[in-house]
Image 1 (cartoon, rainbow, N blue to C red):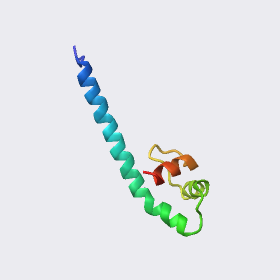
Image 2: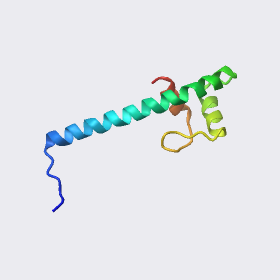
Image 3: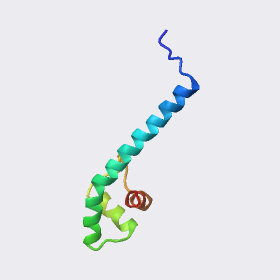
Length: 79
């Protein structure tokens, strides 16, 4: 009772929808953060590590609530 009987096709479709939802959320997060990153860059901080440090000092966290790294900042800029 209560178990879903998903076929392989259903599972693939559900997985694809999940990926699309995560990508949409990540794109929105990056879009919301870009004005802050540009402001940091305009103030003279241009390295990815410097931008990450500034974001962390401002108390801004990643979408998962973690501290920023230079890798995360680079991925956001390249989105």
